[in-house]
Amino acid sequence: MMGRTIVIDPGRCIGCQACVSACRECDSHRGRSMIHLDYLDQGSSVASSPTVCMHCEDPLAPCAQVCPAEAILVTPDGVVHDADKSRCIGCGNCVNACPMGVPKIDLAAKLQFKCNLCYDRTSYGLAPMCATVCPTGSIFYGTLDELRTERPGVEVASTFDIDGTILSTGVAVVVPRDRPRGLPLPGGAGEHPRVTGSPQPAGHLEPNADNVLGEPLP
Image (cartoon, rainbow, N blue to C red; front, side, top):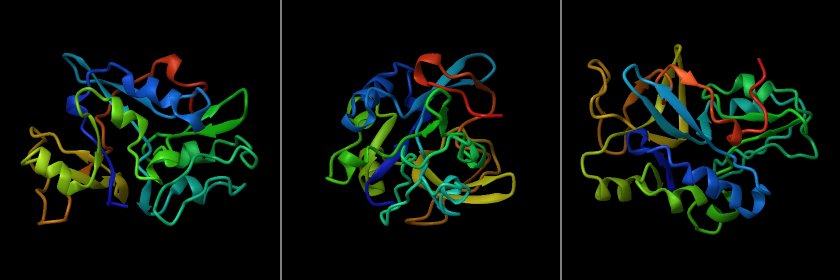
């Protein structure tokens, strides 16, 4: 992807949930938020971070690969769509396969739902709803060059080492300035640092129940 895309900066998130409210208002979402906030227990305080689909590129969309009903479409521009409700059987394979813990299951409707990058907007050159309302810039939408011009010195990651599996994504995450020593620096222009672990710290608390209609299957 890496043209115009979402870049998440967890350090800027203030937990206001404007992004969640805006996502509900997106015409194609029918009043349901496709994203949620993760609440991250960091010991002395609890931080929050918006959780959107990372739109995995390599390996390509593990959620789509394990779907027995072929309900998850990946378009040529790299967007991994939420499940086609006419095909989804609510089996939860996609939930279990996602290394980022993004998809959710509506237990009543037996339907998977997740961020689709506001495809009804971004395919026409508009920014996703969440990015248009974020007051702090925790959700940035644009090119990496635009991000670096706006925020000099910023480092982003779109390649992650998750338990020994290397995952490249279409959505990027800002690398904290105080990241632990030993994590590599960017290799050069156009390259991104490899981050060990998930894009967000361990220690997830349950997301606000208002943000999801069903919990991930075990």
